[in-house]
Image 1 (cartoon, helix red, strand yellow):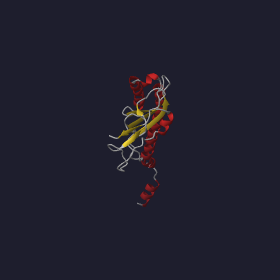
Image 2 (cartoon, helix red, strand yellow):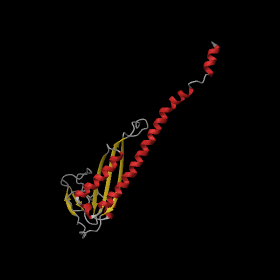
Image 3 (tube, one colour):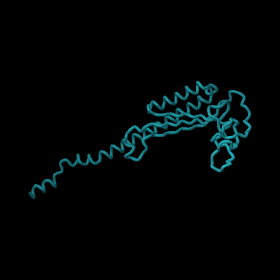
Image 4 (cartoon, rainbow, N blue to C red):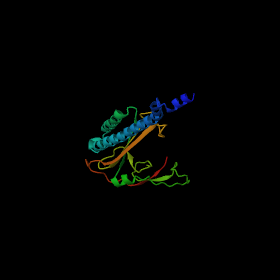
Length: 202
């Protein structure tokens, strides 16, 4: 019996497979996590590249036409779907009278009569762009007109490529964002800056 125990103690057959069985799950999780991270970084790079191209196309006079904006947005969406076909893509344009107004992107001030931090019905606000709406950034939706500054933003959400996010503490969805500021070309006479008016919250 002693000889049998001694033989079992020194027998190394099968040790390699046991070590592999212990290490393989951790190793595979690391590889899949690295691939997922690499895909997200590549997607961010592609998104920023296609956004810059879209910004150049949008700044032309033809880019202010609704049909051309839809075509530009469709090109952005197609590029994203080449890498993640189940991604949701949200594209927003906010136009400002000048680049400095786009840079500050400040909410229009209002008089908080009931001190609740919200612009409630009837409370007056300073409508700086005279569009009749209290804007959180002082801009207008859309591409704007000649020489307007435009913030073009793309938000992308898609499920992770590999189901290992729970093991490494990541959310199940990848969220990417790309933003650029452009100025529409001077294809016409720029109108005068809107005169601020007094508005009332609905």
